Image (tube, rainbow, N blue to C red; front, side, top):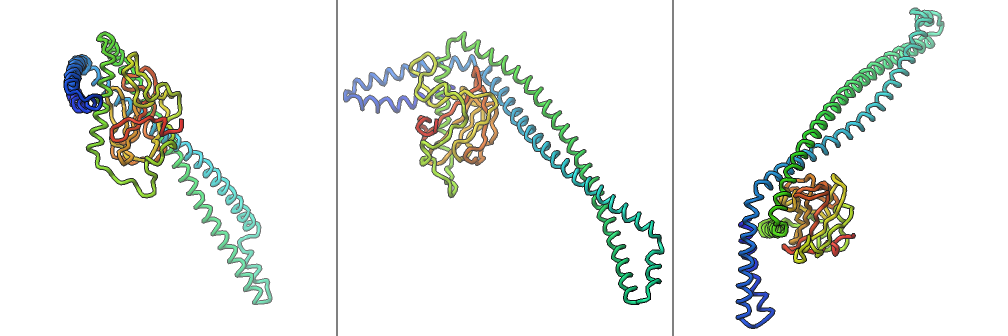
Amino acid sequence: MRAVAVCLLGVLLALAPLLSSAQANDSRQARAELEQTQKEVEQLKKLLGGLQAELGGVERELATVERDIGQIRRQSRELQQQLQQGEQQLQQMQLQSQALEQEVAGQQQQIARQLRAAWMAGEQDSLRVLLSQDDPQRASRMLRYYQYLNRARMQEIQQYRESLTRLQQARAERVQLLADQQQRREQLKQREQQLAGRQDERNAVLANLRNRTREQSQQLKAREAERAELEQLVKRLDEAITRIPTPAGSQPFAQARGKLPLPVRGEIIARFGSQRGDDARMKWDGLVIRAPEGHTVHAIHGGRVVFADWLRGAGLLLILDHGNGYLSLYGHSQSLLRDVGSWVQPGEAIATVGSSGGQAGPSLYFSIRHQGRALDPAAWCML
């Protein structure tokens, strides 16, 4: 927090002379404005430092719990997908087994008919037919005919054996898959129990955090710190990330202006530039979209994950680098589905809606930045 305040002081010190010189030519007025700015920054620095000392331990605990919750949610999502895939495989295997059973039954009937016919004709049938023939050529043809019948009969018996083996294998695979499905259900149940426990811990930590914040009457200062920390993160990413060229064939982010989809559908409860909280000086630098908890958050454009972790105020936050200085931010997530360094395609699932970062209810914080400057998402996305 002290580092954030120092960075904020540096930014204000750098901007104050430029702003004052643009507004007036009087150097004394510029110096007076600079001194006043320095006093305000020092006062804010003291307030933020005191608040950090009071809430730091609680926030670190909240960060740990919410990271765990996000990881459990991700594991539960993967298990649910595996269960769905397993159910589809079971249906396919059931159809395969039914087809094999019908095939085996038909082969059994065919072999039974042939065996009955052979028994009724007697073992010496072919020999009697051959001996009763006066024409040697006809006898030769009859011999070949009986040989053909025997080969066909043996081939059908072999096919029957192979079908029976496939049926037994299919039944064994189905039994194994059923066991795997049961194991996944038990694992999912364990994850849900873990999640319930961690949710209780999270609620207790969050209640403690809110009580401390309310007692200290520092909500405005906390929001200032959150904004400054997020700005610093974006600035560091913008300066430190090695820009990788946009993959061939993909549309540059700037050309998609006005055509981008929202990352999640829901009610927009805070818009860019609207007042944040009770203080008119605090403005939102993005959108806040209320949506059901656990709903999938999609990437608005292709890019690379450059940040995926918990951040004060933003909770579980994922940042995508779209190239040419453009970033998109997705905060308050329940879980993050992609890791740092991953490339994602437009519309790909990257997170789920949650209330991390101390939010009262599930929502998504969504912002677009260009070279560190916040842009109005309404100008870029189809609302």
